[in-house]
Amino acid sequence: MVRENNIVPTSKPPRSRWAPNTKGVYSERPIYDSARQIVGVTRQLHIRPGAVGARVKHTVYHEIGHAIDAMNVHTNGYNTGQKLNKRQDVFAALQADRTSIVALRLKRDLGDQYSDEDLKLVASGRTVRRTDEAGRTRVLSLGKWGTYARSDSEVFADAYGAWRLDPAGLKKVAPNLAKVFEELL
Ligand SMILES: [Zn+2]
Image (cartoon, rainbow, N blue to C red; front, side, top):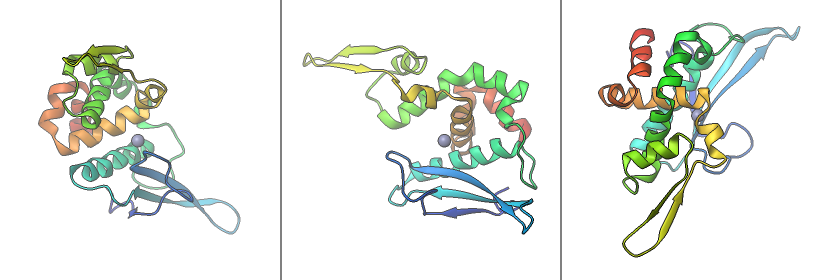
């Protein structure tokens, strides 16, 4: 898909500079002819330099997930129509697996600092307070980031990234989305 659609990987930021904490971005820009008609699209995967290891792979697949979502599996031309995540069956799968995917994303960022149960609570929008043996209390909640992390586009892209790295693993935590990817792609 990346080759057929000429999606170009680049280490350049999508605009003049990288936003803080952004590891990757998928961008689409229409190509116009002299009469200002859209005749094509430039698709780019922007991958921030300096990131290393398995995280880079996930970032690349996550951004490809955004590309698939935006193209709505139409693989030619400039698709200005609905995103794939708005399709009824895909949206139903997103609803069913949303909290699991956000919990998986938190686990990738936080490692084993919190139990899977706590991560699921936080991913669902709750605030978790835990006091360790030294008496220090840690508070974890999604805060403002939650609106972004739980959005349809982010959950779709992040689940796709996880599925590409570990299909069997994703099937365990997000069976509905795993089924969507298996059937669609
Ligand atoms: Zn994203």
